[in-house]
Image (tube, each protein chain N blue to C red):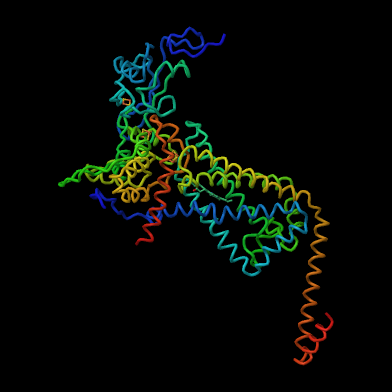
Amino acid sequence: MQGPRIISVEANSASFFSRNEFLIRRLHSLTGLVPVGAYMCIHLITNASTLGGAPMFQKNVDLIHSLGPALPIVEWSFIFLPLIFHAVVGVAIIRSGNPNLSSYHYVGNVRYVLQRATAWIALAFIAWHVFHMHGWFHNEWWLENVANEDLGGHRFDPKHAASTAALALEAPIRKLAYFIGVVSCVFHFANGLWTMGITWGVWTTAAAQKRANWICGAVGIVMTVVGLSALVGVAKTDVVAAQAYEDTKLQMKQEEEQRVAAENKRLSSLTAEERLAERKAREANH
Amino acid sequence: MIQSTSHDSSAHDTHHAPPAQFTVRVLRQDVPGGSSYWERHTVKRENDMNVISVLQRIAANAETADGEKTTPVAWDCNCLEEVCGACTMVVNGKVRQACSALVDKLLVDNPEEIELRPMTKFPVVRDLMVSRARLFRALQKVKAWIPVDGYYDMGSGPRVSAESQEQAYPLSQCMSCGCCLEACPQYTKIELKQEEGETAEAFQARQKEAYDRGFVGAHAISQVMLFNKHPTGAMNAGERLDALTAEGGIQACGNAQNCVAVCPKEIPLTTSIGRAGRATTVHVIKKFFDR
Ligand code: HEM
Ligand code: SF4
Ligand code: SF4
Ligand code: FES
């Protein structure tokens, strides 16, 4: 059943952004949770494993880097591009508002301002952090001339995970920067989770929003503890011992690779009958 | 000695003894788009004054605190009982209705002075009078009514459950005062100037378009929830949600929740915003797959 139509919303010749404002804002909200927020949580949990010692951290890093040549594709499509989208739209959103905290000191208003302040901190921190550890791009010229030791870029080596992370964060000023960055990102994520629930209409009544606030607050506290425990982890890391472990492990891995290669080479030089005979001998042995 | 708060305005507590007179600082503006300036007035305190009666004394006196002749300060009011919204202004930095802003209570916070400013999000017509045209345009944009007029008899309406009425009643109390918009950090001022040689119609059309592209505001979002909840109003639910997902729609809200904190009618605006967030999401997805 349709009632009579009243005045229609007139289509106007607006820009792409304004015509798709709703969709873009919803995508901004969504990317805050997945993939960006979800990635941040996984990232902080992985980093917290430095508390478990160099071997444990190395194992987790190896797992991520087992993606091999697919890793940059995954990084760019699931982390960097969504994050850049969230950040670019986020800056546009910040500019669209006009904070009035000095007149209205409500908790919600404080959080509105903090959400924007932590967005700026997150933007600056993440940009620096990704340069500091990762280098932004892994092309040879860039690594040699820009993301190099002098400029403090690309300090993390996934093959020497614990030792390079600990070295990169040795200076107290860097630890402080990471402390501020992690706490800001986690606040932004946890508070964003709460506003997201209103944006999408998951929690609507004041009572439900209050309950959700407890849950988001708990997520925030847990992720803060997890995030900061990584800082404790690197602080406790013995760089020399960690490096010794990583080198031994690398050497063992290389030796294993060489052994496998030699064996493959030997096998490929055998005739089919010889290989069959060898296999029979091995089975008889068991 | 601890004294309990008393309703007696001539309280004996020396700390709260009301002054015999006080200063009123008014932000004045002579013409739309003109520059504004502060003017100070001295007003003798009387019992049971509200900001409207203060403005009446100022108009009767028409003299500044320094004894200079001045024009009466212009303001707007109507019901004098906080149901029409016409007298909304910024009193001591907070948006509220002048008619329900009691002077003795304001003097408890600051015994010397009361500060009056027009709302900052609407174009000033003169002094404390603003044009809330954009607020009303937003109600038009979202079709905040139930269309029952026509050439044919639509019959009697469907019954509305008591539960649904209970949900709707608080929303129906909105008096279009604009407090929620004034306090909203995402609702920014739109003020256009009529160009030389531009006809009134052309100017209004331009203004309407500018208003439609700006944020509709919490009051309009809440009215959508009110009328979409009504069984007859629900017939146009899709059109209202279309308006809420158009440019300047619900997506412009940044969840600061100032609106609900300042609404004099205590309308659960953020619940409406949450419900509208859900309804628009479902609506947009449905529309995409029904295409
Ligand atoms: C660690 C990285 C980040 C994470 C995990 C993250 C996560 C989130 C989440 C979950 C939301 C809630 C969305 C909603 O309310 O609907 C959000 C909102 C927001 N984010 Fe981020 N974000 C990150 C980085 C950034 C950056 C770098 C910026 C921009 C400089 C930014 C700007 C914003 C803004 C302005 C909002 C508020 C949106 C609104 O109120 O509608 N975020 N973010
Ligand atoms: S919740 Fe939305 S509408 Fe209400 S004050 Fe905040 S930004 Fe404005
Ligand atoms: S919702 Fe409340 S604050 Fe907003 S216009 Fe209506 S009565 Fe005023
Ligand atoms: S005069 Fe109607 S609300 Fe103040």
